[in-house]
Image (spheres, rainbow, N blue to C red):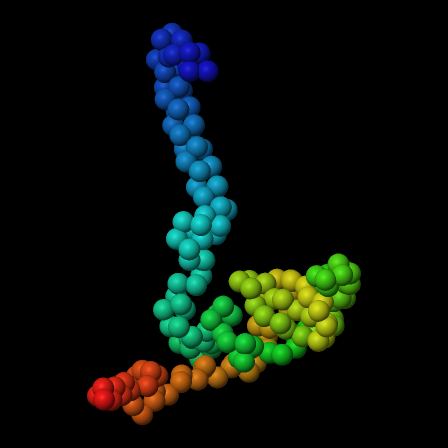
Length: 180
């Protein structure tokens, strides 16, 4: 391809101008393709390179999953909430497969059911139909967790009080008795 472009560029100046434009377009589309690839690969790539998932940096500095917004709303980061701050039961908006790891039995919970929320793993909710060993995973967006938390934001996690003796929980050192 480059050899053909060189031959065309030697024959006339008009062809040379078009070759310059073709090279420019080739570089332009190459950069646009690299940008699009980076945009789509960024969430996984950023996590691998820095260890920080996208979207967690603004709230992670707060140390709490609840951040008040200027308009009176509240931004909630599920990763920073304690289990006590999460709702006990959630409504699922999509079918979810739950399995028993010991026996391998698989059940399908239909959308519209209210299930027990076991925990949050990144952007996924781990749910169970009850107290049994069955557990399944689905995206947080397919549940009503965010709607429940928006309707009744959880109170900030309680900070443990320091002990009267100071910041340390270690007992005071008592001197050893003198040898007899």
